[in-house]
Picture 1 (cartoon, one colour):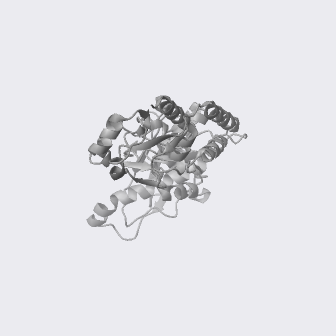
Picture 2 (tube, helix red, strand yellow; picture 1 turned 90 degrees about the vertical axis):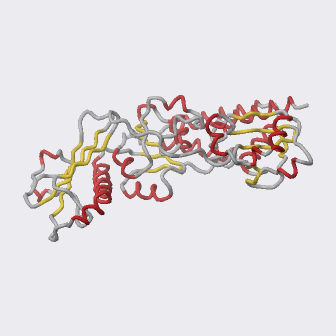
Picture 3 (cartoon, rainbow, N blue to C red; picture 1 turned 45 degrees about the vertical axis):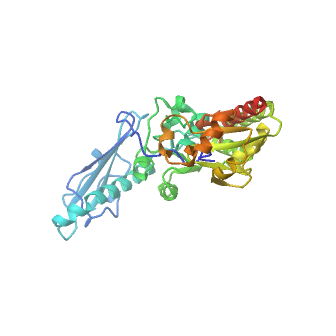
Length: 377
């Protein structure tokens, strides 16, 4: 369940993979343009150099061929892998326009093809099936990877892993980050990629075509979905026992909550929207002993007109902290009726990170909501 608190926080990249942790260097020996795309790739034994997974210095380069040399440095490896992909020279000589228009596109094609070839050369995971090189593509996936995977198996997290809306942001310190693009991810040679939404709908298919296993975090729209997602993610990273333990701890926390006595509450986000009795917000309110002031199902604008006539006993606010508030300057959450309601009623102030993604940490929100409900006059 992503973005319980309203519109997702800004997801633009804020960091790149540090050079010392992993890089992809592309060197074109004779240049490539759009008129000479990389195709037919690879080096066969007949070409005079063994297999494509051999070091580049063992491969004999033909005089009439162009070479694209790709070096991918692995953070945990003691030496670099070097792969040469050869391409026959085109019959037509590219003109200046070809070079100007096709340069960037050709670089991306070459990079993706080379990274795909490198992924095919990667050693298989250990006999136990436990992934050795894990990459996470968005902040929701980051939580599950940081929770269940061994730290030394994490090659890179998303650029949002350390942002305020990331629950395990403190645990992200020291880990490299990578943008969710096929070229950059494949250059890291992962044997498992974990994602919720990172990279868009086409990225998973591109990674799987390159032979990379992808684990998709399911939509967490309730407590049962959270339990399923925890067990599935822990199993994917080779730690099923940790998933079972996390589910047991999650259920123990929920069972220990002392609920309020049907206190009416309105969920207020900085984005000016609220949620009805269904979905994750409904589950949180129900577990905390709150009745939802918003009776319409799904996500809807804050009921400003109704608030002018009647009030909930308490409000539950999320994403009103830090820079996240600034993106919603013109939202209805700033309407005088709404601000007056929030100011005049007891308030359950939720840490946005506890409701930004459907995980075990929503138990924090349930405890906060229940405490505010019990204290309501």
